[in-house]
Amino acid sequence: MAQIKIDRLAHSYYAKPETEEDFALKEMDYLWDDGGAYALLGPSGCGKTTLLNIISGLLVPSRGRIIFDNVDVTTKTPEERNIAQVFQFPVIYDTMSVAENLAFPLVNRGIDRSEVGRRVKDMLETLELSAKANHKARGLTADEKQKISLGRGLVRYDVNAILFDEPLTVIDPQMKWQLRTKLKELHERFEHTMIYVTHDQTEALTFADKVVVMYEGEVVQIGTPAELFERPRHTFVGYFIGSPGMNILPCEIEGNKAFVAGHSVDLGANYGPVDGARLELGVRPEFVRFTEGVEAGIPVSLVSVDDVGRHRIVKVRLAQHEMNVIVPEGRALPDKLAVVFDAERCGVYANSHLLEPEDFDNQVVGYRDDY
Ligand code: ADP
Ligand code: MG
Image (cartoon, rainbow, N blue to C red; front, side):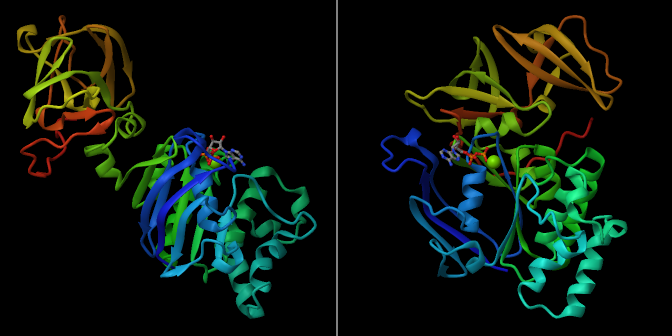
Protein backbone atom coordinates (compact mmCIF):
# COMPACT_ATOMS: atom_id res chain seq x y z
CA MET A 1 0.00 0.00 0.00
CA ALA A 2 1.26 3.43 -0.79
CA GLN A 3 0.50 7.10 -0.62
CA ILE A 4 0.38 8.44 -4.17
CA LYS A 5 1.45 11.98 -4.92
CA ILE A 6 0.79 13.81 -8.16
CA ASP A 7 3.18 16.68 -8.59
CA ARG A 8 2.43 19.39 -11.18
CA LEU A 9 1.16 16.78 -13.57
CA ALA A 10 -0.12 17.63 -17.05
CA HIS A 11 -0.55 15.55 -20.15
CA SER A 12 -0.97 16.13 -23.85
CA TYR A 13 -1.21 13.42 -26.48
CA TYR A 14 0.45 15.84 -28.92
CA ALA A 15 4.24 15.91 -29.28
CA LYS A 16 4.28 19.71 -29.29
CA PRO A 17 1.24 21.01 -27.42
CA GLU A 18 0.62 24.70 -28.05
CA THR A 19 -2.61 25.77 -26.34
CA GLU A 20 -4.51 24.77 -23.18
CA GLU A 21 -6.88 22.78 -25.41
CA ASP A 22 -4.02 20.52 -26.53
CA PHE A 23 -3.82 19.11 -23.00
CA ALA A 24 -6.00 16.10 -22.09
CA LEU A 25 -5.01 16.80 -18.47
CA LYS A 26 -4.46 20.37 -17.25
CA GLU A 27 -1.86 20.91 -14.54
CA MET A 28 -2.83 19.28 -11.23
CA ASP A 29 -1.37 18.45 -7.81
CA TYR A 30 -2.86 15.90 -5.52
CA LEU A 31 -2.19 13.48 -2.71
CA TRP A 32 -4.03 10.16 -2.56
CA ASP A 33 -3.85 8.88 0.98
CA ASP A 34 -2.64 5.41 1.67
CA GLY A 35 -5.53 2.99 1.99
CA GLY A 36 -8.21 5.35 0.70
CA ALA A 37 -11.12 4.38 -1.54
CA TYR A 38 -11.38 6.98 -4.29
CA ALA A 39 -13.67 7.41 -7.21
CA LEU A 40 -12.67 9.35 -10.29
CA LEU A 41 -15.93 10.73 -11.63
CA GLY A 42 -16.63 12.69 -14.79
CA PRO A 43 -18.21 12.55 -18.23
CA SER A 44 -16.72 10.64 -21.12
CA GLY A 45 -13.61 12.32 -22.52
CA CYS A 46 -12.74 14.38 -19.41
CA GLY A 47 -9.42 12.59 -18.87
CA LYS A 48 -10.19 9.85 -16.32
CA THR A 49 -8.46 7.03 -18.22
CA THR A 50 -5.51 9.29 -19.03
CA LEU A 51 -4.99 10.07 -15.33
CA LEU A 52 -5.46 6.42 -14.30
CA ASN A 53 -2.94 5.20 -16.91
CA ILE A 54 -0.42 7.77 -15.69
CA ILE A 55 -0.84 6.56 -12.11
CA SER A 56 -0.48 2.93 -13.14
CA GLY A 57 2.49 3.56 -15.42
CA LEU A 58 0.96 2.66 -18.78
CA LEU A 59 1.47 6.27 -19.82
CA VAL A 60 4.36 8.66 -19.09
CA PRO A 61 3.04 12.21 -18.50
CA SER A 62 4.25 15.13 -20.63
CA ARG A 63 4.91 17.13 -17.47
CA GLY A 64 5.21 16.56 -13.74
CA ARG A 65 5.91 13.57 -11.53
CA ILE A 66 4.20 10.63 -9.83
CA ILE A 67 5.56 9.78 -6.38
CA PHE A 68 4.78 6.63 -4.37
CA ASP A 69 5.80 7.03 -0.72
CA ASN A 70 8.60 9.50 -1.56
CA VAL A 71 9.91 7.44 -4.49
CA ASP A 72 9.65 9.01 -7.95
CA VAL A 73 8.04 6.35 -10.18
CA THR A 74 7.20 8.61 -13.15
CA THR A 75 9.05 6.48 -15.70
CA LYS A 76 8.55 3.11 -14.00
CA THR A 77 6.36 0.33 -15.49
CA PRO A 78 3.14 -0.93 -13.82
CA GLU A 79 5.05 -4.08 -12.71
CA GLU A 80 7.76 -1.99 -11.08
CA ARG A 81 5.08 0.09 -9.38
CA ASN A 82 3.30 -3.06 -8.24
CA ILE A 83 -0.08 -1.85 -9.32
CA ALA A 84 -3.06 -3.98 -10.32
CA GLN A 85 -5.32 -2.49 -12.98
CA VAL A 86 -8.72 -3.72 -14.09
CA PHE A 87 -9.93 -2.41 -17.45
CA GLN A 88 -13.36 -1.79 -18.93
CA PHE A 89 -13.18 -4.97 -21.01
CA PRO A 90 -11.88 -8.40 -19.94
CA VAL A 91 -8.16 -9.10 -20.06
CA ILE A 92 -7.85 -12.83 -19.49
CA TYR A 93 -6.23 -15.95 -20.94
CA ASP A 94 -8.87 -17.74 -23.03
CA THR A 95 -7.05 -21.08 -23.05
CA MET A 96 -6.67 -21.24 -19.25
CA SER A 97 -9.40 -22.36 -16.89
CA VAL A 98 -11.14 -19.86 -14.64
CA ALA A 99 -9.11 -21.02 -11.62
CA GLU A 100 -5.83 -20.87 -13.57
CA ASN A 101 -6.60 -17.33 -14.67
CA LEU A 102 -7.10 -16.28 -11.05
CA ALA A 103 -4.00 -18.14 -9.88
CA PHE A 104 -1.77 -16.71 -12.61
CA PRO A 105 -0.87 -13.35 -11.03
CA LEU A 106 0.01 -15.16 -7.78
CA VAL A 107 1.99 -18.05 -9.28
CA ASN A 108 3.85 -15.46 -11.32
CA ARG A 109 5.00 -13.78 -8.12
CA GLY A 110 6.13 -17.02 -6.54
CA ILE A 111 3.44 -17.18 -3.89
CA ASP A 112 3.21 -20.42 -1.93
CA ARG A 113 1.02 -23.09 -3.60
CA SER A 114 -1.33 -23.61 -0.64
CA GLU A 115 -1.82 -19.87 -0.28
CA VAL A 116 -2.60 -19.62 -4.01
CA GLY A 117 -5.19 -22.39 -3.65
CA ARG A 118 -6.80 -20.69 -0.68
CA ARG A 119 -7.05 -17.29 -2.33
CA VAL A 120 -8.33 -18.67 -5.63
CA LYS A 121 -11.05 -20.62 -3.81
CA ASP A 122 -12.00 -17.52 -1.86
CA MET A 123 -12.14 -15.37 -5.01
CA LEU A 124 -14.18 -18.01 -6.90
CA GLU A 125 -16.75 -17.87 -4.11
CA THR A 126 -16.74 -14.07 -4.02
CA LEU A 127 -17.38 -13.91 -7.75
CA GLU A 128 -19.87 -16.81 -7.68
CA LEU A 129 -17.77 -18.71 -10.18
CA SER A 130 -16.92 -21.82 -8.09
CA ALA A 131 -19.04 -24.06 -10.33
CA LYS A 132 -17.03 -22.96 -13.36
CA ALA A 133 -13.57 -23.16 -11.75
CA ASN A 134 -12.33 -25.76 -14.25
CA HIS A 135 -14.06 -24.41 -17.35
CA LYS A 136 -11.90 -22.83 -20.01
CA ALA A 137 -12.36 -19.04 -19.97
CA ARG A 138 -13.01 -19.06 -23.71
CA GLY A 139 -16.56 -20.42 -23.33
CA LEU A 140 -17.73 -17.93 -20.70
CA THR A 141 -20.09 -14.99 -21.13
CA ALA A 142 -18.81 -11.40 -21.30
CA ASP A 143 -19.75 -10.61 -17.71
CA GLU A 144 -18.21 -13.84 -16.40
CA LYS A 145 -14.99 -12.96 -18.21
CA GLN A 146 -15.06 -9.46 -16.69
CA LYS A 147 -15.54 -11.00 -13.24
CA ILE A 148 -12.36 -13.01 -13.81
CA SER A 149 -10.59 -9.78 -14.79
CA LEU A 150 -11.73 -8.21 -11.54
CA GLY A 151 -10.66 -11.29 -9.61
CA ARG A 152 -7.19 -11.21 -11.18
CA GLY A 153 -6.75 -7.72 -9.75
CA LEU A 154 -8.22 -8.54 -6.37
CA VAL A 155 -6.34 -11.78 -5.57
CA ARG A 156 -3.16 -9.79 -5.15
CA TYR A 157 -3.03 -8.58 -1.56
CA ASP A 158 0.48 -7.10 -1.76
CA VAL A 159 -0.15 -4.38 -4.34
CA ASN A 160 0.49 -0.67 -3.83
CA ALA A 161 -2.90 0.17 -5.30
CA ILE A 162 -5.70 -1.35 -7.36
CA LEU A 163 -7.03 0.78 -10.19
CA PHE A 164 -10.38 0.12 -11.83
CA ASP A 165 -11.33 1.72 -15.13
CA GLU A 166 -15.13 1.53 -15.46
CA PRO A 167 -14.91 -2.20 -14.67
CA LEU A 168 -18.63 -2.90 -14.42
CA THR A 169 -19.70 -1.56 -17.82
CA VAL A 170 -20.39 -5.04 -19.24
CA ILE A 171 -21.89 -6.47 -16.02
CA ASP A 172 -25.67 -6.74 -15.62
CA PRO A 173 -27.27 -4.34 -13.10
CA GLN A 174 -27.99 -6.85 -10.32
CA MET A 175 -24.46 -8.27 -10.39
CA LYS A 176 -23.09 -4.72 -10.62
CA TRP A 177 -24.52 -3.86 -7.23
CA GLN A 178 -23.26 -7.10 -5.75
CA LEU A 179 -19.73 -6.64 -7.08
CA ARG A 180 -19.57 -3.05 -5.91
CA THR A 181 -20.56 -4.13 -2.42
CA LYS A 182 -17.89 -6.83 -2.64
CA LEU A 183 -15.25 -4.32 -3.67
CA LYS A 184 -16.11 -2.19 -0.69
CA GLU A 185 -15.86 -5.20 1.61
CA LEU A 186 -12.48 -6.14 0.17
CA HIS A 187 -11.35 -2.57 0.61
CA GLU A 188 -12.30 -2.62 4.27
CA ARG A 189 -10.62 -5.99 4.76
CA PHE A 190 -7.29 -5.31 3.01
CA GLU A 191 -7.15 -1.51 3.07
CA HIS A 192 -5.74 -1.28 -0.41
CA THR A 193 -5.57 2.14 -1.97
CA MET A 194 -8.32 1.81 -4.57
CA ILE A 195 -9.07 4.21 -7.39
CA TYR A 196 -12.28 3.54 -9.21
CA VAL A 197 -13.08 5.34 -12.47
CA THR A 198 -16.70 5.83 -13.43
CA HIS A 199 -19.03 8.26 -15.20
CA ASP A 200 -21.91 7.12 -12.98
CA GLN A 201 -22.50 9.22 -9.85
CA THR A 202 -24.31 6.41 -7.99
CA GLU A 203 -21.37 4.12 -8.52
CA ALA A 204 -18.94 6.80 -7.36
CA LEU A 205 -20.94 7.88 -4.33
CA THR A 206 -21.59 4.34 -3.07
CA PHE A 207 -18.06 3.11 -3.56
CA ALA A 208 -15.82 5.93 -2.47
CA ASP A 209 -14.89 7.75 0.74
CA LYS A 210 -13.66 10.55 -1.47
CA VAL A 211 -14.78 11.47 -4.95
CA VAL A 212 -12.52 13.27 -7.39
CA VAL A 213 -14.70 15.09 -9.91
CA MET A 214 -13.11 15.78 -13.29
CA TYR A 215 -14.31 18.06 -16.05
CA GLU A 216 -12.51 18.90 -19.29
CA GLY A 217 -9.11 17.70 -18.10
CA GLU A 218 -9.31 19.38 -14.72
CA VAL A 219 -10.02 18.16 -11.19
CA VAL A 220 -12.81 20.55 -10.20
CA GLN A 221 -13.48 19.21 -6.71
CA ILE A 222 -12.34 16.48 -4.35
CA GLY A 223 -14.66 15.72 -1.49
CA THR A 224 -16.83 13.29 0.39
CA PRO A 225 -20.21 12.61 -1.20
CA ALA A 226 -21.78 14.94 1.41
CA GLU A 227 -19.36 17.78 0.61
CA LEU A 228 -20.09 17.50 -3.10
CA PHE A 229 -23.78 17.74 -2.36
CA GLU A 230 -23.60 20.47 0.27
CA ARG A 231 -21.07 22.79 -1.25
CA PRO A 232 -20.27 22.20 -4.90
CA ARG A 233 -17.20 24.25 -5.69
CA HIS A 234 -17.88 24.31 -9.41
CA THR A 235 -21.17 24.53 -11.29
CA PHE A 236 -20.31 21.29 -13.05
CA VAL A 237 -20.20 19.46 -9.70
CA GLY A 238 -23.57 20.94 -8.77
CA TYR A 239 -25.06 19.93 -12.05
CA PHE A 240 -23.46 16.46 -12.31
CA ILE A 241 -24.06 15.31 -8.72
CA GLY A 242 -27.64 15.15 -7.54
CA SER A 243 -30.84 13.96 -9.11
CA PRO A 244 -31.75 16.26 -10.65
CA GLY A 245 -28.65 18.43 -10.40
CA MET A 246 -28.31 21.93 -8.98
CA ASN A 247 -30.25 24.80 -10.57
CA ILE A 248 -27.87 27.30 -12.12
CA LEU A 249 -29.34 30.71 -12.85
CA PRO A 250 -27.53 33.70 -14.37
CA CYS A 251 -27.60 36.56 -11.87
CA GLU A 252 -26.21 39.86 -10.68
CA ILE A 253 -24.93 40.41 -7.15
CA GLU A 254 -25.26 43.36 -4.81
CA GLY A 255 -24.05 42.86 -1.25
CA ASN A 256 -26.20 40.10 0.27
CA LYS A 257 -28.66 39.90 -2.63
CA ALA A 258 -28.68 38.22 -5.99
CA PHE A 259 -30.91 39.38 -8.82
CA VAL A 260 -32.28 36.71 -11.12
CA ALA A 261 -34.15 38.15 -14.09
CA GLY A 262 -34.68 41.25 -11.96
CA HIS A 263 -36.06 39.36 -8.92
CA SER A 264 -34.24 39.73 -5.66
CA VAL A 265 -32.94 36.64 -3.79
CA ASP A 266 -31.52 36.74 -0.25
CA LEU A 267 -28.09 35.16 -0.02
CA GLY A 268 -27.60 35.14 3.74
CA ALA A 269 -24.07 36.52 3.31
CA ASN A 270 -22.30 39.48 1.77
CA TYR A 271 -20.36 39.31 -1.45
CA GLY A 272 -17.85 41.91 -2.46
CA PRO A 273 -17.96 43.48 -5.92
CA VAL A 274 -16.99 41.06 -8.69
CA ASP A 275 -15.80 42.68 -11.89
CA GLY A 276 -16.10 41.21 -15.32
CA ALA A 277 -17.01 37.66 -14.25
CA ARG A 278 -20.01 35.65 -15.45
CA LEU A 279 -22.12 35.30 -12.30
CA GLU A 280 -24.55 32.51 -11.54
CA LEU A 281 -26.68 31.56 -8.59
CA GLY A 282 -26.61 27.86 -7.72
CA VAL A 283 -29.30 26.25 -5.60
CA ARG A 284 -30.25 22.60 -5.41
CA PRO A 285 -33.88 21.59 -6.12
CA GLU A 286 -34.07 20.32 -2.51
CA PHE A 287 -33.61 23.88 -1.23
CA VAL A 288 -36.21 25.66 -3.30
CA ARG A 289 -39.81 25.73 -2.10
CA PHE A 290 -43.15 26.99 -3.25
CA THR A 291 -44.66 29.76 -1.14
CA GLU A 292 -48.28 29.82 0.02
CA GLY A 293 -49.03 33.25 -1.45
CA VAL A 294 -47.50 34.51 -4.67
CA GLU A 295 -46.51 37.82 -3.01
CA ALA A 296 -43.99 36.05 -0.78
CA GLY A 297 -41.87 34.66 -3.60
CA ILE A 298 -40.70 34.92 -7.18
CA PRO A 299 -43.48 34.03 -9.61
CA VAL A 300 -42.78 31.05 -11.89
CA SER A 301 -44.80 29.04 -14.40
CA LEU A 302 -45.26 25.28 -14.41
CA VAL A 303 -43.45 23.23 -17.04
CA SER A 304 -43.83 19.63 -15.84
CA VAL A 305 -44.33 17.41 -12.80
CA ASP A 306 -42.43 14.16 -12.44
CA ASP A 307 -43.51 11.82 -9.66
CA VAL A 308 -40.53 9.72 -8.63
CA GLY A 309 -42.23 8.02 -5.66
CA ARG A 310 -40.36 9.51 -2.73
CA HIS A 311 -41.13 13.04 -3.89
CA ARG A 312 -42.08 15.03 -6.96
CA ILE A 313 -39.70 16.89 -9.21
CA VAL A 314 -41.47 20.00 -10.44
CA LYS A 315 -39.93 21.81 -13.38
CA VAL A 316 -40.80 25.50 -13.56
CA ARG A 317 -39.84 28.50 -15.66
CA LEU A 318 -38.50 31.68 -14.05
CA ALA A 319 -38.39 34.30 -16.83
CA GLN A 320 -36.44 32.49 -19.59
CA HIS A 321 -34.75 30.03 -17.18
CA GLU A 322 -35.91 26.53 -16.32
CA MET A 323 -35.34 25.15 -12.85
CA ASN A 324 -36.38 22.18 -10.71
CA VAL A 325 -38.09 22.16 -7.33
CA ILE A 326 -38.35 19.04 -5.17
CA VAL A 327 -41.70 18.81 -3.44
CA PRO A 328 -41.99 16.39 -0.51
CA GLU A 329 -44.55 13.61 -0.80
CA GLY A 330 -48.09 14.51 0.25
CA ARG A 331 -47.70 18.25 -0.24
CA ALA A 332 -50.13 19.90 -2.64
CA LEU A 333 -48.99 22.32 -5.33
CA PRO A 334 -50.48 25.82 -4.95
CA ASP A 335 -52.54 27.08 -7.93
CA LYS A 336 -50.28 30.02 -8.52
CA LEU A 337 -46.64 29.20 -8.21
CA ALA A 338 -43.92 31.31 -6.63
CA VAL A 339 -40.60 30.12 -5.27
CA VAL A 340 -38.23 31.05 -2.45
CA PHE A 341 -34.67 29.84 -2.05
CA ASP A 342 -33.11 28.71 1.20
CA ALA A 343 -30.58 31.55 1.71
CA GLU A 344 -27.99 29.35 3.46
CA ARG A 345 -28.07 26.94 0.53
CA CYS A 346 -27.48 29.45 -2.23
CA GLY A 347 -24.02 29.57 -3.79
CA VAL A 348 -22.66 32.29 -6.02
CA TYR A 349 -20.46 31.20 -8.91
CA ALA A 350 -18.07 33.44 -10.83
CA ASN A 351 -16.99 31.92 -14.16
CA SER A 352 -18.30 28.57 -12.84
CA HIS A 353 -16.24 28.62 -9.61
CA LEU A 354 -17.80 29.06 -6.17
CA LEU A 355 -17.23 32.47 -4.60
CA GLU A 356 -16.54 32.71 -0.88
CA PRO A 357 -18.71 35.37 0.75
CA GLU A 358 -16.97 38.17 2.64
CA ASP A 359 -18.31 37.01 5.99
CA PHE A 360 -18.40 33.28 5.39
CA ASP A 361 -17.96 31.54 8.74
CA ASN A 362 -17.77 27.92 7.49
CA GLN A 363 -20.88 27.09 9.46
CA VAL A 364 -22.17 23.62 8.65
CA VAL A 365 -25.87 23.68 7.95
CA GLY A 366 -28.06 20.63 8.45
CA TYR A 367 -30.28 18.91 5.91
CA ARG A 368 -33.78 20.19 5.47
CA ASP A 369 -35.79 17.76 7.56
CA ASP A 370 -39.20 17.93 5.92
CA TYR A 371 -38.60 15.49 3.05
P1 ADP B 1 -12.21 9.45 -20.20
O1 ADP B 1 -11.54 8.22 -19.73
O2 ADP B 1 -12.61 10.39 -19.12
O3 ADP B 1 -13.36 9.17 -21.12
P2 ADP B 1 -9.76 9.90 -21.71
O4 ADP B 1 -8.69 10.01 -20.70
O5 ADP B 1 -9.87 8.59 -22.43
O6 ADP B 1 -11.16 10.31 -21.08
O7 ADP B 1 -9.57 11.02 -22.82
C1 ADP B 1 -9.30 12.37 -22.51
C2 ADP B 1 -9.03 13.13 -23.81
O8 ADP B 1 -7.84 12.67 -24.42
C3 ADP B 1 -10.13 12.96 -24.86
O9 ADP B 1 -10.29 14.18 -25.52
C4 ADP B 1 -9.58 11.90 -25.78
O10 ADP B 1 -10.09 12.06 -27.09
C5 ADP B 1 -8.08 12.17 -25.74
N1 ADP B 1 -7.31 10.92 -25.91
C6 ADP B 1 -7.40 9.81 -25.16
N2 ADP B 1 -6.53 8.87 -25.56
C7 ADP B 1 -5.86 9.40 -26.60
C8 ADP B 1 -4.81 8.94 -27.46
N3 ADP B 1 -4.26 7.73 -27.30
N4 ADP B 1 -4.37 9.78 -28.42
C9 ADP B 1 -4.90 11.01 -28.58
N5 ADP B 1 -5.88 11.52 -27.81
C10 ADP B 1 -6.36 10.73 -26.83
MG1 MG C 1 -12.07 6.20 -20.03
